[in-house]
Length: 600
Image (tube, rainbow, N blue to C red; front, side):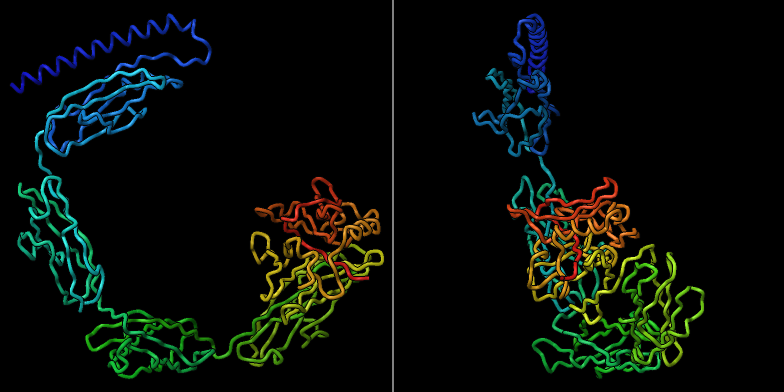
């Protein structure tokens, strides 16, 4: 009887397919005949024909059925699509709402006879439905084994709880399932099948254990779940602390390591043992000592790691690390050469100094300085011992300058920088800005007309006590600061607490920039204003910042302290490509460099 019914269903489906094809052909012919009469952009009037297929034809409660209504949705157009929706059990409630997707899957979890209804509809309300009956007998699937471990990591004193209650089965309840466990990953079951969902276990050794649960249902179908349990010998109640005394430490020193401040939380009188691994190579120099002190002459230059392990009476422990750096018995100085004004003319006095240099073993006062001004490998005897000198260079060019510092034990180091001498005849000088650091910032200065100007961009940062305004380096890259200076918000141009420029100097006004160009005359052309030009202003193309950084090496706007009647800010704009040298009205959200001019 069942086979007869299946044959009837198949015949009905074939008839439906033939009818669908004929209807589609008729609709196509009708559409072609009427298309010439349709108004432009008017959606086609579609009468959808509902049709779908199901695969597999036969299944049970474990089957995922594939429903395909593509032939229905493809009848639509972009302006008037065909949508489909589904009712899986013909109860009058649509289980899946309208969609242009023709393919969908569904699983019937309960056995029974189902009539699946699909409705095809256009947006203007034309509809058609199709129904297919499906008999779904009981099927059986394996349980989905799952479990939790509490805790999922602990030491060997811990009793772990394993719970299989998260296991699920589509046909059977939890109390119908059985479980067995492999608790140590040796591929041997440690328990027999049982309906008990929980088990406890304590491990005797630290290891990463592979824990397996096998779940079995009444139909003898099974599945396995595996997870990793970390069992350690760590005791986080132990708080190890280690330090060493010498600083700096040399290869001649015996280093004294001290773990006496180690503690055991809640047990101040706990007996603790100390193990020491110099080099952190698992080769322990001393193990399980009752003394918290370890003394060692390392005798090897460089950084050395030390691992301390503190162990309690149960054999549980905690580790901590220390690093000691060993220096030679005498190390060379650290030489830093600073050029106060890196660009000048043949009359400029160039400042060279070694402020900021240091020596680990000796006072900076005990270091001997030597200078090679001409880069000829010969020290200039007239400057011997001087850590700050002023030098003039007779002709334009670039001059490498080298300084060496030598300590009393004849250890030496050097540093080199370059001085650039350009053609020019202006009077030049040096501005010393002592604010914010014991090592001053230096700026070359040039006199144009009767006013003194800075030859480089301001590099001043207010100290941490104020947040009224702060500058930033281009791209937040501090290595660009010495060359391009600092980019500042507009607030820096008028702030008095703190003031941007050093005492006796101020942010130039627009009128002062205009007077500068008048005083320069022919030297105010862009090519002579930029770095190395005859104006000796040495304008550098330092870019800008707004929502992002831009323009480095291409152009620059330099803040003035002037605003117009409506409060808009002025900057001085220089662009070699566009040959622009003029004032500009700019938004106050920008960040530009600053040049200072000396007060009259």
